Length: 356
Image 1 (cartoon, helix red, strand yellow):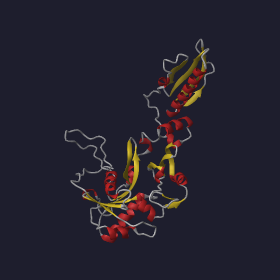
Image 2 (cartoon, rainbow, N blue to C red):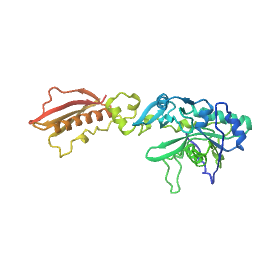
Image 3 (cartoon, rainbow, N blue to C red):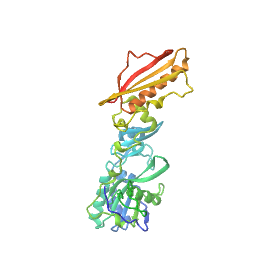
Image 4 (spheres, rainbow, N blue to C red):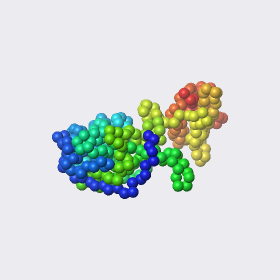
């Protein structure tokens, strides 16, 4: 991913291009040549739906069925809203399945391989015109922590998707440790300011980024380099979905996102203690361990004579303990038969958890 330092563009010129409705009979390269004054050093940003229409990815049928077909893993679900990871690794609402600007009863699926499509377009343009242009295929997506949507690059050829500035020194002499601008996404977002959503302009031509366009015949790593690996993704599941996956432990892909215990890391069972206002329920946590194994005895008790509310609170505490243990990938070792409750208390649960 390492790239030499690139001087930022002093200015950009972006022009949107109006196209007719696209079908599988249309040749995108021929359309580009006919509608765009192509020059070496340009970056062409093409809306993914155009590529989908030209390559037969517009389908009839129920949207939910196609979402299920395009989904590799559900990241989060809230009613009819589904955030899903596609088979190519992208995380998008509805797995990228879109019904906008299409006849009723049809949906557009994302290109099967947007990077390959971008490489094909770049190659065909070079062969047909001799121009060395870069090609981005863009799609619209929401962002974690932010309201609204923006365009990003799902296909990329001829321009580096990332610029690795780590190790560079800023104006105050500080070394940059984490700065890796996602330039392909930035270009796609800027281009959408001219393309829009309702203008019939699915293509934008960006000029001023000649210093980013790779030499003829080079493609770069593609937009696949922008997809964060699951093991490095701190937000690989929705909050509720992570709890469900931890409790059920039936989603191997989801469980990859849960932290494993390090050598110096503790399980915060103590954080589960019932608030002090609850005097009829108590949790005891006893930690033990040897060099190759660590374990925790978690015992939950209810005061003798306590009412139904206390037992309900204790039950919730048992479930919270199990979810926490699952999240840390602990396993149940045993339930000690010999465990006796404190005088005046009744044991609701007594379980030994240990590291695998």
